[in-house]
Length: 249
Image (cartoon, rainbow, N blue to C red):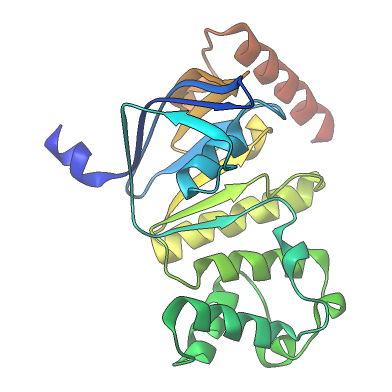
């Protein structure tokens, strides 16, 4: 038990969150250990992103929050759905990453070395040329990789990826999953992967939490959750995901 406590990156016990008198998160118990990939799965509105925002400390001011225990690592990076849209269209990509580096470290230091290293890790090629591009001169996939690299600049212990595969075709979706697999392998980072698509985390996540109407209704290893489910909602989405998987193959 002592070892598990030491290795915990995030630990939440009995979290409840209400906004405008609406109970949106109910009795959430959630933990991530160092080096894990943990998936948080559920339909839109189930409370996944709200949980991530609680971890990051960016809930709306009108939120009413109660919990028995909450601890987290000091450095957490995050990539949200379509986060690349925050890139300034009038500033070259290299200058934006340079400014981001400066915002974390207070100086420009070895920003080029750091940024080149991270862009290599996320699969960007011809980096010298790429840094001189404006965002509109790169593809959507490239901009998404820039957003991931930007989230890694501060060397976070945990990277939260929130719906980063949404609206992608099956091929591109698994390219992104493989990218996160490589990031985990190369950088040794802990990952919280938030998605509505259970199949996207198969053979990727270590453990899975499933959320439904603001509650965690199932938790299991990634392997076991595809074999056995107890909650009707989880049974339904597993069956639906298997149907889509078979059809798309």
